Length: 167
Image (cartoon, rainbow, N blue to C red; front, side, top):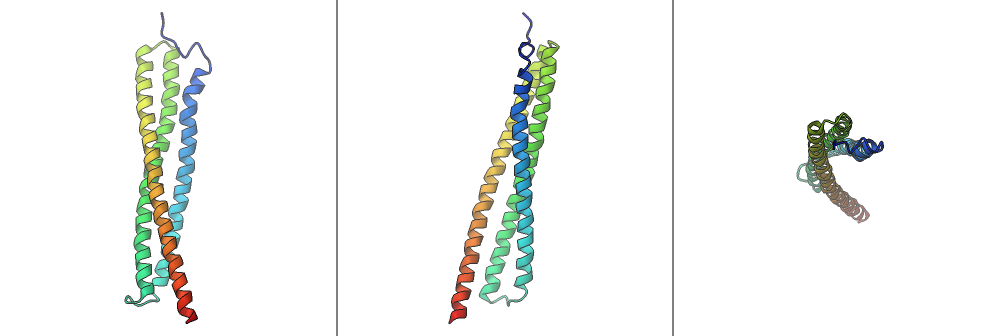
């Protein structure tokens, strides 16, 4: 009996390619969003750098902005790491889709060994891609927590400045 699981069903190739294709799209959207967040961190860092020169190093405003710059540095590092990992996942999902198509072609030509090799390689590349996607998302969660913390500190600074101005 010949081994041809994908030749019996014309939609089997499509099924094997759809999951990596959808995850490729998801990774693309995450890369775009992460790149935008990184750009916002760069913009905010420039604003803080422009503000900090107006204060003496002993002032509270200087200290708060210096701490914010450290937070921005950490955020930028997290986003950069996440972006690298998400791009690797994006490429891996695309490779997984291509490997699925190649494996389907090998099955069509009754190449059992080639099909099995493609299946194992495709699964390994896909698993790596999913691991990267999850890792990138976890880094994004860490960066978001830090962003919210910095926003809280900025709100507290603004509140204390308003109270100081009122007295």
